Length: 283
Image (cartoon, rainbow, N blue to C red; front, side):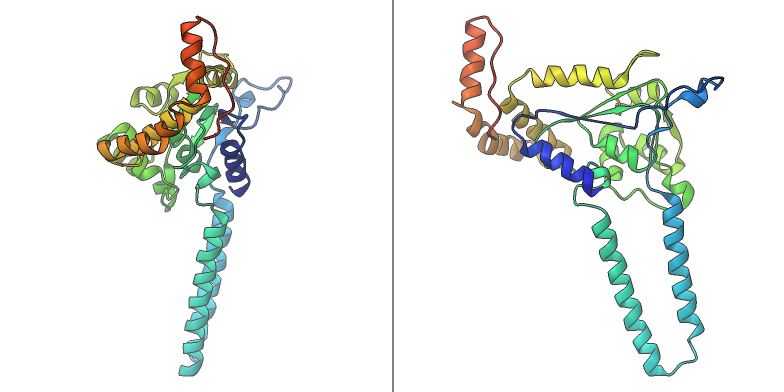
């Protein structure tokens, strides 16, 4: 999580970079005699490691059992144990916070202040934390094999990385409730119909290649205008009122763009009927 958070922080800080793409590992080379199904990429991201989660839960249960076995100790010892248990819980919460950066699962699920757009190229399973990442990406391009879901309720946990309040903004309350309370999965075309996906690529097409094509279109636009336009949309996504968001865009964004090199270049290129030659953004 922290490594990815560092990558996206670098994306925002590096002037020469204008758009990011995140995808799962490439599929392994086809195995002779293997079925088509076994050759499919396993996942974009299937979420948290439940085996690791189970090991942590077992460890906590053993600690609690040990505390119960010592109930016959003196009152003073019980108070000491309670203090130790409180310290343990505090340390556990502290470790949990360290394991997840402020920008959330994969450095993306709670990335609300990112300047540069990020495209998710999804091929395969996109479940749990993986879906929480995709929901907060700026664009989502998927293959026919993509499957989305928030199955946390099926295993006794909760989607805590930011998707619960965000998904309702995309699909509406009733569909969001259906998704998170049943834990059911959405195939690629249904996810597109619900508004979770921008585009489903044709069968056999390269989803990453298509994401790169879209990124190239974005990178062909003014980097200053892209940053400020994204900022305005993100404010609505984060629940800021229309008037307040518009004021912030004018004050914090447009004021830096107006009269700048890229604005002058864009207008000049339009008048001269040529492609603009953008400068790296200084915003």
